[in-house]
Image (cartoon, rainbow, N blue to C red; front, side, top):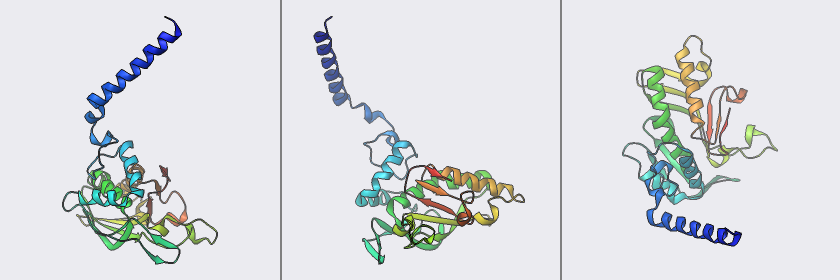
Length: 239
């Protein structure tokens, strides 16, 4: 077989494969969490494709709100906000006001819509199952240090803007369970007298790395000894 004929047959094969793909649409047989063309649902399992879809919501406010609107009843209570600038130099876009999710918060907070989607998925798929596994009770409340703060990282004058400056971060300090237990990041991260709490917190930290772009905790540095920092920047920076 000469080269010209081989090239011709190769071209025909490519065309036939393309036609077959258009006719049979093999991607429609993929589970939605693995199908890049399927709309994101807050109920989807977290996969690499799901994480990619989450990242796309950063530039698609209407699509993000649609994901929240389609959430099962009782999963999240929020108010969609118009873009605004609460403090000079820190405009907020694609943000929502969160009142509650499947659990309570010590105070309402404003956060980017994609962060809320990631949080609710994390809460349902990891946080609550881990609490049942390690502490025999579900989480009922999250005590947090807030989300928005118009500042640079570590309040340094010449540093870059913190993710908190765009409300793209959320700091979790403690968790309260249905059975009355309280788990504090500061007290229980290395609590040898309550090893189940320590194990639970470390499992929460590790699993969060699959849902948020950046996850920081007590082992990262002293400023994070009393809370977990979750934000939607980057991809897989977990310390």
